[in-house]
Image (cartoon, rainbow, N blue to C red):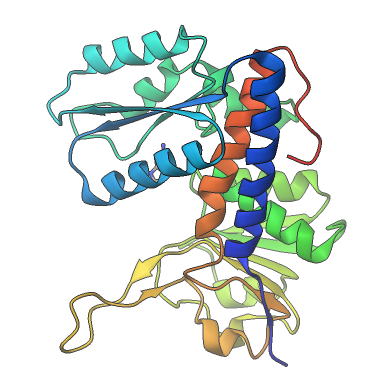
Length: 297
Ligand code: GUN
């Protein structure tokens, strides 16, 4: 069997298109654009690229983008003051502080300063708590994007065995919550799990978020499993090449011989993250304006 390739890039493009159309409608009825503020502290090269991409995508979706690039020696007080200013700014619906922050800044206390109703990353403890007890809040973008791909592929997930590999606050834990809410039977596995391969082999749904290149091979997978690969790892460069190849946590080619469907890296989960960020921002804008967000956002 050769697995169906789950095209996250195409799915994300359709979601961005939908967000853009609804954002135009929002501007017409409310009289202002939905707005996303992105804060970057320091010179981290990857973060610069992400923040640039987020700004561009925000504008392309008919929303306002507010970029704040601060020097790496920004004090905690100055960053807190900016967050407070954005909390109180009615043209800002969503606030994202790009992580990682420089070492002298405490990420948890900065995230805690963001208004939970503008926390479109879903990183605030209030939003983690809301997800955990089934209240409306904001769900982190990457796991929500994985969930959209899964329900698009499988429809109803009731009763399916799902194994999430990885237990981070940003991916593993919220992913498990979402799968549980969808009535899957959920196992969270991690680096200390005994006989990880046989745990994963039970799964109808595998979500891999461990950060180990090509760790999951075909003998780890049940026939026909749906595999969502959140990993983005760069292999060492081949001789004569400047950059190594990007690969996921799953050995894509061999896993494709066993899986029913699988996301590629790149072009799978990655493009979903920004699309869901735009979606969360437009949902925040509706809530902040006292409107119901469209059901298919
Ligand atoms: N750094 C890498 N990914 C993300 C993300 O989704 N949100 C934030 N705030 N920082 C990140």
